[in-house]
Length: 343
Image (tube, rainbow, N blue to C red; front, side, top):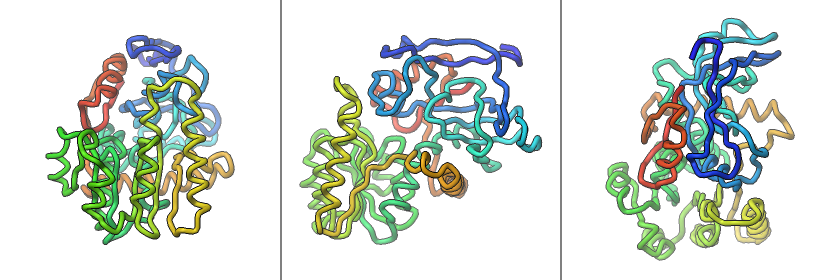
């Protein structure tokens, strides 16, 4: 591939991972207020797994280039953007478009990556880190002395949640399959096997008065149990419906049902709170405020990464052209951490 060519991965429709298409083209040009980023690392998140099934609730119509986030180096700037930005390593949250060797990004959406933090390291905490940080600090407001329950404690978001919660002095209970328990114990997490144990009963043994916060990406029956496990004044943060990943029918219905439950729970006079977290919430109402908050919070996440409060968990690194293999690996449930793609 020469300097004027780019490679991107296209999701053409509801396909198996092997149905992903590799396409070549010309490197895009930055428009006013934009930059071209040469991708160094992007990742496979749960969103892409849902999108290839047509199950992500606000995905664009097929075909499109997936890729929720990326880390890379600015190679060109458009009108109105400081030329000195060229050569800077940045991260960006995109929702789609990251699985490409070169990506056009609004300069205002590019967050500098600190010196000393590698591209793959930074990639593991872009969408996962911003999600974990905002749920923990902006929604649940977890602090020292709290006890929290993290579902999927070995996963991309869950593993960052665990570490950020511990960094503020919280006690963490985490669900995961048994093969991940030893690693969780080493981190100081109390593990529960979601496959063989009764999660509500075990949590009540560990926290008889209830937990101060639950972070639930599972949805379905799990979110009802999560609500019931809260202590007075506790907070439930639901941020997905993983249990419906392979379902058929409307992709909006699981989310709408969750939102209905959360509205009802918050209407009850019981002092507990429930949220459905969407990292994009508020963007349509105030793009400037959304960007400022994202920039501030992702900068905090990168600082925590650099301090060692959170560690980059890279499950595997594969070239972009092996995206199908990366997707298969991510969906296998056999790895801990982020599957990272590089150009």
